[in-house]
Length: 155
Image (cartoon, rainbow, N blue to C red; front, side, top):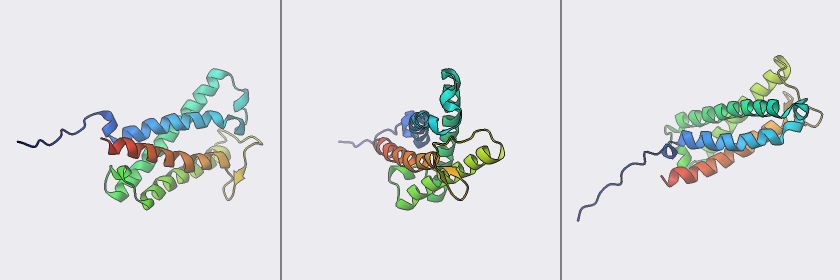
């Protein structure tokens, strides 16, 4: 009787970045629509324009998620850290996303004035970052990590 080593999974889902990007896209896209009333003028946009703005923001969110994933992978010295993450790895993953969010929200709301918050958006000191994007980057990365871990472990 011979024992064969199982062939490595060559599907795209075996690549952690693919799962992180896909799940980030799905979850952030929904979040972007939910927070529409907290950005000035968004609720009054025509349907197609609103979709384009939310899609653009979601693509940026996926970029943040992948950046956070890769920074954590460098620190962990493994792209498969997400299969069994340590607490510090999850913390770093979230912290990088939050840091990018604070920086970009500040730039776009205070420097370039690309968007503004509506009166419905609570702001968090010291930079006046909107509460919704901060909560977004606390909740969604943890969901992405949890769901990705399940997919990556089964591969």
